[in-house]
Image (cartoon, rainbow, N blue to C red):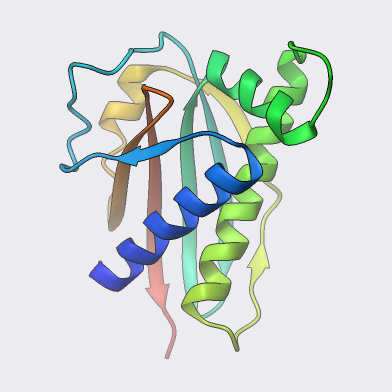
Length: 159
């Protein structure tokens, strides 16, 4: 995986989360996701979106469920401090769509892409750990002191 793609993905991730969701993002120095100082969430949402074009593949995002609810409140700008779980799940799907669109447009401004409908499901820390992002990259990071992960699976780069 190209170091340029990794740096672009990290920049997009930080920019989107900080400007649209008002949360602080800190990437890990290693790809293993090991930082004992971080809070460990027992439950995660796993968002996915597929894409086809010059680059084809799958973007997967793991976010702690409770933090995601806070992010949804920030994103929607509501007065309410709590959002229903269904809205938090929808927000994760929309975040995957935003991240994927921003990343692909920064990697290639000329090619059009077809994106699948985002999908969000419940996940566990164990599933997040074993998703080694085959044929791709993992960006382990923290949001507000909690572990999170972005995986980018690239199937091909068309010529």
